[in-house]
Image 1: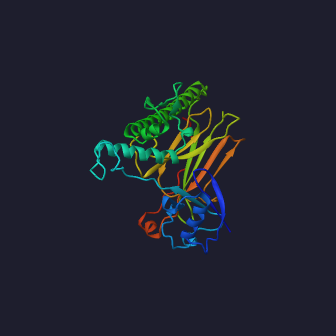
Image 2: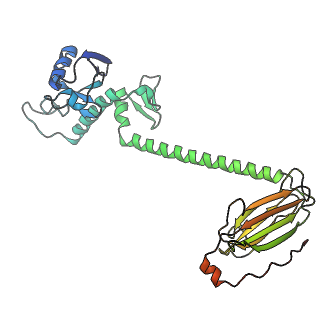
Length: 323
């Protein structure tokens, strides 16, 4: 059974059984291997600190082949006995400046262990041997001084400003790209030659009722004698809120027919549910007769509604009209 101990210098494998070895025994093995007392280091597995020395490693879900990190303890605090201006044996209160110096020194030591300066885009060594922060335009005597600067308010504020600026530039570049794309599409559409319209086609509309369900049926016949041979007539349903010719009425919808080079024509029909079955809703394009036929049937009404309505009059004789 093997475990891996990771330090700031590298990684070593040790023979250890996680199911029978305690944290204290692992500290003893590490002390023999690295000559570091257990009081000066602590062990970490993932996000867990191995602080209870009488526990078995498997209780921390450590298994064979896992990696345990060893960190050195930083000796924090101020030497009250030997600092400048203090008398031997006196433990006076440290001044604010001394506390700040101690805090910066601890942050510097911690940053030197955890931060890789080679990956910092703002860290630069100049020709004089000192270090510069390209973000804040500051000079530093050593790497620790620079790392302490990166933890300060000035550097963090400049980082936030740079991130906000990059985000705004990215958003503006995306908006500019979308605008250029829309402009190019509009220019291409404007440059596309528009077909010549020759007027409205002839049409015929027949109203009927289904003899079995008494549902209303409509049949449209549109004549396109001069249609474009490369195209075929099309139809679609349009909501009343899509058109701008008259005030929108939710009780009606529009059925449009289009074929080049004729103008698009539309019929206002009730906005009711349609019967989409093949035998009730179908269209046909007769190339020889040059006629486009569409038949639709509305959904069957309930018996109460049929009893309340008077019987439907006979359908009028269809007439062909040209506009």
